[in-house]
Amino acid sequence: MLRLWADLVPTSEQSPSMSRTPAPPPTDAPASAPVADSALTHGLKQRHLSMIALGGVIGAGLFVGSGAGIAAAGPSIVLAYGISGLLVMFVMRMLGEMSAANPASGSFSVHAERAIGPWAGFTAGWSFWVLLCVAVGLEAIGAAKIVTGWLPGTPEWAWVALFMLVFLGTNLAAVKNFGEFEFWFAALKVVAITLFLVLGVLAILGVLPGTDSPGGSNLTGEGGFLPNGSDGFIIGLLASVFAYGGLETVTIAAAESENPVRGVAKAVRTAMWRIAVFYVGSMAVIVTLVPWDDPEVAEVGPFYAALDRLGISGAAEIMNVVILVALLSAMNANIYGASRMARSLVARGQGPRLIGTVSSGVPRNAVLASSVFGFLCVLLSYWRPDDVFPWLLNMIGAVILVVWVFIAVSQLILRSRLERESPEKLVVRMWLFPVLTIVALLAMAGIFFLMLRQPETRDQLLATGALTAVLIVTGLVRQKRAERGART
Image 1: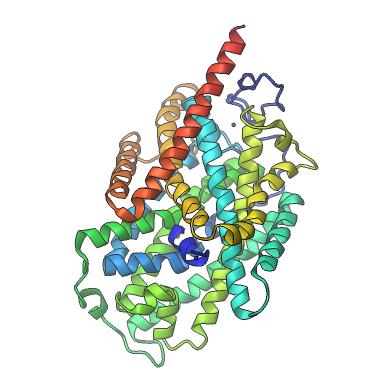
Image 2 (image 1 turned 180 degrees about the horizontal axis):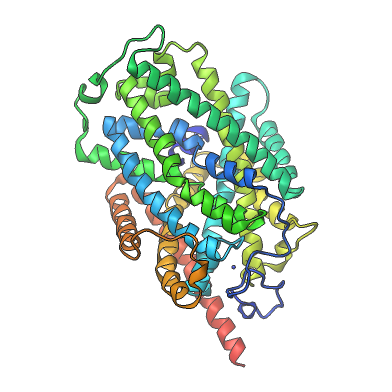
């Protein structure tokens, strides 16, 4: 996803005592009682939640960003996506376990606060909020670039403003409007990726009219399965890890669904086949059909290269439409996720009270606050095109990994607590606990180490580390201040 953004943009929930100022009722505060925010509505139907979960794994990062991974790793990108996909399955299973036991609009932020402390919930929540807000702006610019390519001469800033206004409107209205938009966006993405996979498999089998089966020549030729050795595989592995971002939103949305526990459980239990089919399956089809070193793979995208190889007329425009839908879907989902995370943090006394107010079941001030950066993005692209965007991309580069670490540590602590205090809430269970949780944490540590070794990702890691350190220190200071206030 980050590499996709780099290609598209220009380059020239804590307790009330956390704050001395009275906060809104801490409906997301750590407690054994129901924690879903009662001020929010429950307007998402099961079909909405199911499609949000299904479409959440199909992002623009898959359609375009995967090209850089293929160019680096060659056919071994299939293995890279398989390994990183397994890690994501573990993370989603852990998150699903905690979210089904205690649904909350703050999701992993609430769980981190329960397990580790208010500073952890503060750090996990606000870092994720920053990630989503920056992503909204970058995705708006990416979508605008596609449209201006179709309508040359139209101003890019106008399209950015239009997209932001549309999705600001959908998120300011009832949550069911967000659900409907995401339902149809996700449906279009699912149809597109399914058709691609069907056509690809038919071509590989040699039964698609006008095509000959490539056999295994593209998997073993041109340098073999690992054409660039272990270094190329590592770059592909790192690229694949960040392509999976977006799955976490379904556990945030579940808190506003008709049946949060059942919705989360169903979404998490189907994560395995979704990841296997959409990500690993797509990579397998592409590297079987197209030589990994085909210039089109990195320059215009692997899906376009595969469709072009199959002789599909208008392949470029087809993929532009799909990528546009993916970007708009991500914008919509990220505004929603950011606003609900902000609302949850404020409800727990961890943010400015002003943005925590709820009107007609919608945290409208939080929606507005979460959309501000999108409106500023086009101005930033004019003012500081050469350094602002690379700095922002670096700052959020490894945030999702930081969030995953909080999820794993929280689950390691809360699972034992749940088994002791409320075993009936464990309707979703992490496999082979605690072994696979520890394995996942070790894998994350390994990814951090690999990022530090690679020049392309070292800056991202250091910038994200700086952001995380600032949030940790701020969270600890706030926690200590609240504890002193409570004693006096």
